[in-house]
Image 1 (cartoon, rainbow, N blue to C red):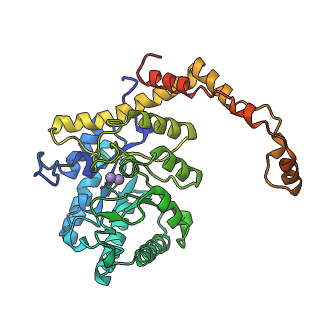
Image 2: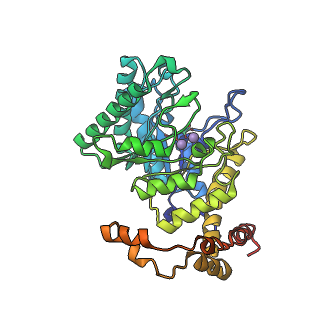
Image 3: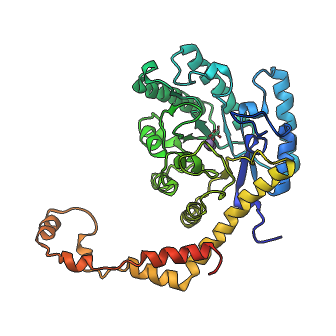
Length: 388
Ligand code: GCO
Ligand code: MN
Ligand code: MN
C-alpha cells in the first residue's frame, strides 16, 4: 500500500451525484452513461473511499412509488453492507424539478414552500435510515433574478421558519442529527440568498435551535465570490460550526467549475489541508466535484483517486512544512514576543486603559521591522514544488 493510498480513517466521502455526474452542461448533453447507485457504491469502495453521501433523488427517483422506494433502499443498503461503505451525510434535492424554479423554502408560493418542507422531512427520514449524522441544506434555487419579485427580508424569514420546523422535527423524532448550511453566491440563480459562509454563520444565530445547526463550506463557492476559503473555514471552526466540508476546486471569477480537489489553486488547497490537520477537524472530508467532461469510466476513477491522493500529498507537505528548520526558525522569529506588554493581556480594566494611554511607543523604531514574509512564502512554495 502506497503512502498516498486512502484508508477508511481518512474519512473521504463522495456524493452519488459526483462520481455519478454524466457530464451534462448548459451547452451539451451527457457524455457518460448513467451509473446506478449500487454500482457507484462499488466504484467508490474500489478506489478506497470511506463513505457515500446522497440527495433523496440520487437514490430514489422523484416519481418512485413506496414499494419501489423500499426495494431501491434495500438494494443500496445491501451494497453498503457488502463494501463496508457508510452514509455520513444526506441532503434534499430542492432544485432539479420544475416545481422549484422560483425557489423552495423561500418561494412566493405557499404550496411550493410546503411541498419543499414535506420533501425535506421525508428525505431526513431516509438519511437517518441510512445512518447519516449530518444533514446538509444547500439552497439550490433560493434566490432571484430580479429583486422586484420578493423581499429579501421575507426570504430570510421563510428560510428561518423552514429550518426551525426541520430542527423541531428532528428533535421530536429523537434523531441524532446535526444540520449544516451550505452557502453559494450564484448559480443556478443570478443571486442566491445567504451567499457566503460568513452570512450563514450570522443567520444561524437567529435560529431557534442554533446549537444543532452549523455550516458546510465549499471551496468553489467561496472562490466564485473571490474570497479566501481558508478564512471562511477558520471562522466556522472558531464558532464551533464546522460540521462538514465540501472539497473541490475553482478559479476565481469563472463558471461553477467543480474541479478535482487541488486542480486549480494548489497553494490555497495546501493552506486548507494544513489548517484542517492542525486543528484536528474530525468530520467527513467530502469531495463535491466531478470529472472533466472529456472523461469516460476510467477518467471518473482517475478523478476520484486524484481528489484523495492530492489531499494526502498536501497533508504530507504540511508535515514537511512543520519539520523544516528554516521555516520554523523564521516563524519563531515572526511570533517572538519579549513579554514587555504582558500586563495588557487578559482583557479590560480601568487601570490597564490608564496605563496604555500613558505608554510611550517609538513608532519609527517599531516600523523598522523586516518581516521576511518573502522568504517565508518562497520556502512554502519550494515545499509545495517538492524541492525541500
Ligand atoms: C452545487 C452544490 C451542491 C450541494 C449539494 C449537497 O454547487 O451544486 O455544491 O453540490 O453541495 O446539493 O447539498
Ligand atoms: Mn458547488
Ligand atoms: Mn457543495
